[in-house]
Image (tube, rainbow, N blue to C red; front, side, top):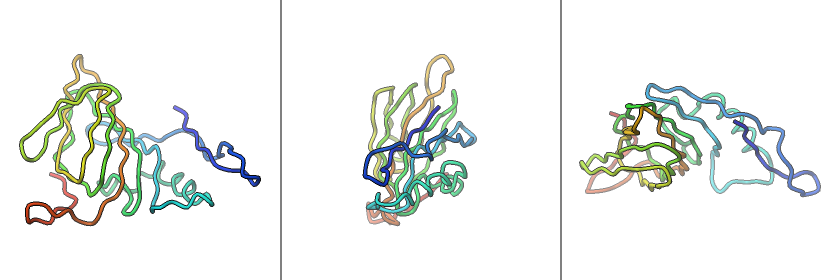
Length: 169
């Protein structure tokens, strides 16, 4: 699949960046993750192409994914996540504000409170540093696929008198 990045030329006109190319798919035990875009700070300075240079590294080296964090510490990420048939992501919490849009398939979203919802293609979820897991319940043995737009949050979330941080079961 192609990936196009726009930027500006020396005259201020919009152009396609030479950094455009293909996305790398990083295999994980239950499926795969592709880094579509990433930044390492906000607000972002679009006057230079430093963000594009960093993204070229992020998309090929799984960077923050290897540490089980879905976004750089002070940045953002857009990820395409594929969950294989019948698989699940373990219960986890990331210190991020996530907007999830389901592209295909059906998943159950389980929260650590015991609540769950069925999320279908076209549905969206906003997560606010909550502990959760995804279970692929798509009929006919198909994958579930969604895109995540994630913004790094503070180091901890304070809720119910507790300090909550990144965790994976």
